[in-house]
Length: 157
Image (cartoon, rainbow, N blue to C red; front, side, top):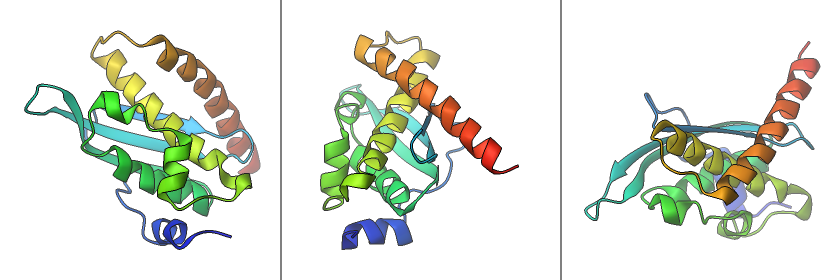
């Protein structure tokens, strides 16, 4: 059973769409269910000259939980410094929604994976040194996206 907050973010998603000329794009997929999420970032400097997520939007192809976790992640990350945003984990996402059924907790990981990928893209484009943990996570996510895309391509034929 989904919480009221999950249903609200599913029925009325926040920050859905694309950002024109994004500073970072992240794509994550789940090999179990085939959900795929795209996350778009616009980065700006705050008064302390730190990189901050000024705007964040998503497009998700997936179930109610995938859409809800995408939506809540955008709210959790918006206006945060990159250093604070990258610390958002799957439990933070699930907790912000008032919980998720155990079988749907992977959707919160999908959301944080997409954020990792968008930040990875931003770091790469701006020639910022990529932390080892982010790089290792990127390699794992990349494999899952390829599998999920393949699964959707085959099921749509």
